[in-house]
Image (tube, rainbow, N blue to C red; front, side):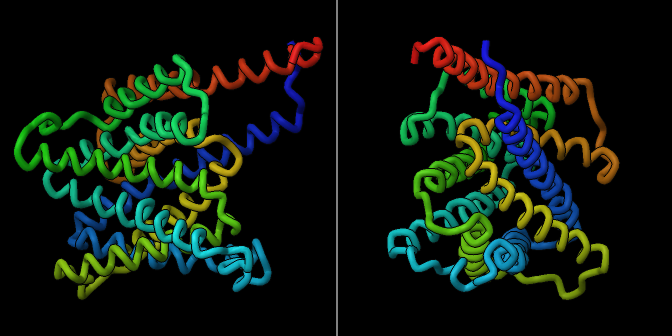
Length: 323
């Protein structure tokens, strides 16, 4: 069997490192957000200002990526269709996903909402098969399903998971949040917009922030009259590393690999949340959570094993003159 070239192995390592960094920052956002919500911050207002600051924080990165910042944000090749696509990504990836997620958490637990949100890779895999022609093999399907179970074990199942009434409505809203994330992932991959990663990150977060803030003020939410230094610290972490960093790295990962493959690593985000919650929030770590972590690792191996095997077999066939 033909050996994988060193350049390809290096590219794969960079791809995995990018996804790990992105999911770590995603996981940290749950910790920072939970602290601020516990201390009295209004959810929609917090989400709106979080992404408004995050959008502004991307501007230096846009500049370093392309010294002509205005051309980077509004390239000449950008058509009306492209601009419309950016608005759709912002409304789905930022406004709909985060807005619906926090709305769901008004009637269900954060654990239940997180479990529903991170069913996203299953929907990405299915939508990726339908709209991008990405392979969806049995091993990958099994890995995705096991990953969802692992997320449930790692975060912890809530007693309201299958309850009716307001809880059921919240669960459906949480599931809709995951579907919006999946749609944004596929749409972004298919749109092939003529702009850099950081420029796209700026626009999608700014569009989403404006939409969320409009909803927040319409709901009568307000920013706290007094904010401590520690709270500002958590907010800035939430807005910049956990938003600008995680979203930017996520787009980089999408550009380097398939939507299905990249989304499989999203199972790491809740695992990182649990690990960070132990020392920061004083959360306990049960044997079920440990089992969930192991299940997540096995699921990731299943998701990616098939693609490596097919690539190696294809290279061997080429070497033998059998394309």
